[in-house]
Image (tube, rainbow over all chains, first blue to last red; front, side):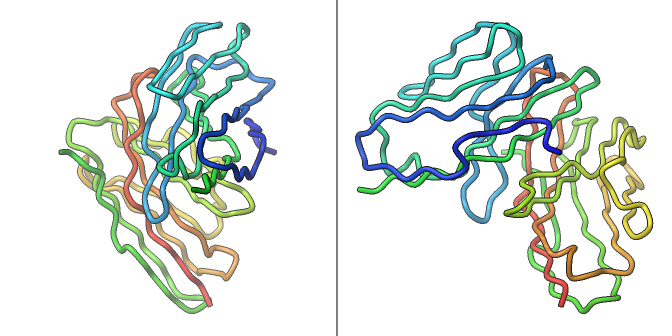
Length: 110
Length: 114
């Protein structure tokens, strides 16, 4: 059983479209992180959110942490082909234990 | 630019053989994690070390998997005997031990057991 469920699992969109990826759990996390992974490489951190309700922006990417610190979303505005990759959320429990979500594979078509 | 180094990059072996994967964490990091990634299960936590001591290996099949940190610059994950269902990409990651700091991943070892 996965601690964190992500949806959708796969997403294929046209360049310029907007999209939202969701990360849900029944557990409360100390913090939540989003990573992006490209083929043949390990995941790389995009952002860390710590406070319930927190919103962080990274250029065209907007990250939100749920008020109860159990869920998060990633919104991409005007997707570009360079956004293609596997997006992973990771919940951090007390004691510095990192649990990763099931992943969302995004393909942006030119 | 500090990186986590994993070796080998690729490993193909026959069922029943022993496999050892190695990881050099970033100097100064005190936490090391081993994950296994498959299409079906995603990233599964296998083992977690803090200051070289194993804190959690509940995700690891104990009968065939073992993880150790002989010193602060080396973490190993061993499978003996290997089985086809162990085929996956194995990632090592290190961190500073702070809940708000990121994990730094190596590029993984792609294991194929035939």
